[in-house]
Length: 331
Image (cartoon, rainbow, N blue to C red; front, top):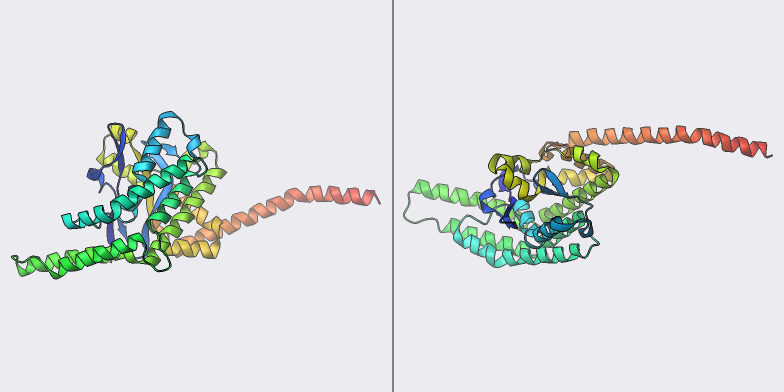
């Protein structure tokens, strides 16, 4: 079954970074059973890049440093949660209380820890984003990490709601009620699927590392030309006025088949996955990347590598001939 996950957009309110519930559904994603929202390690303010994957805390100056530090300390974990998981739990007051009891403090603690480490100056932003994913979706060997426990609690809560459907309503209303909550329950099963949680973390690492390498390879002007307008920015433009966009910090993301991405990395290596990520940054939709497209990209990368090797050989040949001539002349 296909699923809808609501994204969470971060906006500035009175100069303070704040999660804005009214923008919760600014960007919605339709996911297949192996698809997942992956967050790019770039932070945007308005139409400009505020933080690159390679940005360290010491690279930030003045107001930008304060705003980014505030975002990391108060918002980063909640932003990742709402991108990756969506609004599964927020369908009634009891589910919302369960989130507040089990997840809210947990996410705040992770944000505070990630902010403290980032401000230590050694980590790049991409590395901090990886760490946040690892800490939120950690799965120990026993398969009973915090999110897994929360997922099981949500499932129990939903099972009770389905079993004890509304009393004084028609049979048709009960049927619709049970069908709706059964779908929500199916979506919530993601939270205690340790295999899927591990895929989320592994895929995020691949994307973060690829973005970091792309940034290290390109000049700033080239990088600005590389980044296409993403889904979150498009959604913001449709929902929010220009002034609010210019003041807000937000992350970009895409939907990708994590199984295919991980398979591509194992089969073809980092050069191919880096090219796949580059194409997504250029505007290729992650959900359009299938095996056929991956093989096409792999062939292009292989041909490029072959051409570069031939070029290096041609450039080295004259030097080799000169060295050979010198050796012969000295005999």
